[in-house]
Length: 152
Image (cartoon, rainbow, N blue to C red; front, side, top):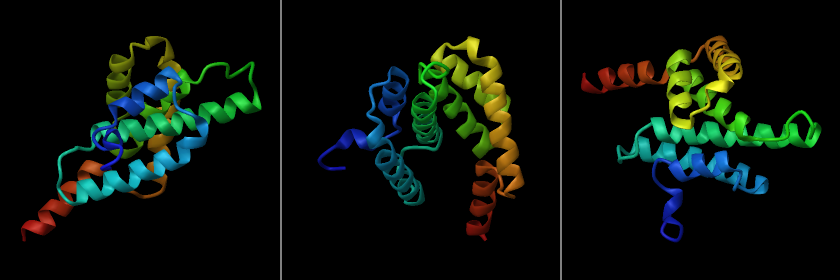
């Protein structure tokens, strides 16, 4: 982080670069893992950074990876990766928080893409159902339980 400080923080530049298509697909796995690990360590250490922006940045990276893969498999059907990035952002939020409509509204307002309502609904509800099927608690509920256990 000392040499590349922009890798730290909320990840707004990652989200914007993913939407603009400025990230190289070969860097996506490394960037995703770095953000996941350092975001978790940062939150566990109680340093500033929050959960929302890093979560949305991870969703943007995952969406960009899916969009790049879809473009390789079918260039005519997946000509642009921007819709994949936007859906990835909302799906990551919906899967972690279990609030798909909130995620859809937030991402739609952030990106000004109301034309993607159906893909946003599909991706967000699919992410929520998968997370529920895995038996994981929503992130804020898990943090509340953890905080209550630490106070005792």
